[in-house]
Amino acid sequence: MNEIPQNPNQNANQTPGQKKRRVEMTVRPTGPILPPSNIQGNALMVVIAIMAFLACLTLGGVSMVRATAAGWQSQISREITIQIKPEEGLDMGAALVKARDLALTFVGTRDGQIMDDSATARLLEPWLGTGLNLEDLPVPRLIVITIDETSPPDFDAMRALLNEEVPQAFLDDHRTWVDRLVQMARTTVLIGSGILILVFTAMVLTVVFATRGALSGNRHIIEVLHFVGAEGSFVAQEFQKHFLKISMKGAAVGAVLAASFFALASFWQSRSLATPESDQATALFGTFTIGWGGYLGIFATMIVIALLTTITARLTVMRTIYEIDLIRSDPARTDGLLDD
Image (cartoon, rainbow, N blue to C red):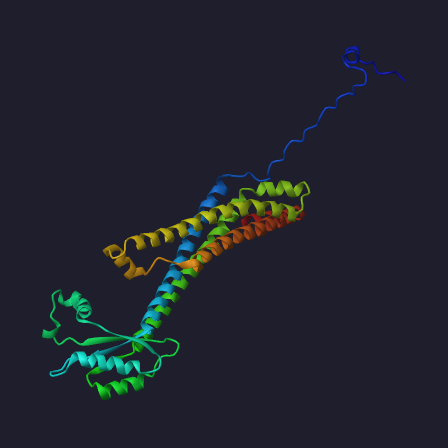
């Protein structure tokens, strides 16, 4: 055999006992199968952010209305009023004290407060103006009795005793107002829940179609991976990861915007008490505080949107691979599958 000639310069440069240096091989870093950002992905992220914001805003609004209605109902249920009509020769002060003491003798009452002249004048101020002299007007006087909601007193017995001892007294237990308020609260919550269901339905449909639209732009990647022998589960997993990142970013942006809206509205309302703007907003919408339950609902909505997008991406990829296999097995089905 012929020996391979050695380079004399190479032997001259090496010192005795020095080993030949091996050339280190560098592995080129692998890139993601899907591009980290493209037009379809950015558009899907914007759509998810908008739908997440609307869904979280509706969820917070329903939670706020429910809490406000429950507060109204609880406040009215905690109190009853005794109204004493003025008559000629009636000692109003003594009648007020007597009616209050009689009411407090019943089990289930906690406290009684007689509304003084200044408090009564403030109640009539929106209709009769300021500077009223109640002694010149036949204005009924009120007693507010605080009761135990869990164990209320016997209203019929209290009403009968007051009619016997103080004929000018009239007991109002607010049951009519409470029933109306309960019906109004239930109707409001039902309407809000219906709106929430519609928003979530629109969100589901929008996210599903937006995800499928974004995947249609990457169909060629699915075909290449499938043709080179990649398993369907591997391809679906790669697309799941990609669209999970997109959906989490979009849903997080929408949820943070909705939570920030309620937090800023609550802060503004607390800083602008006793102003016309705050009073009108409170009268129309109640307090803008949604509590920890509302914020947990916003977080849950964000998770649901992310899972929905991920599941849609997986099902769409698996359906695409199934269509590719059908086309390869029977090319005549191409037109029908493409039309779908």
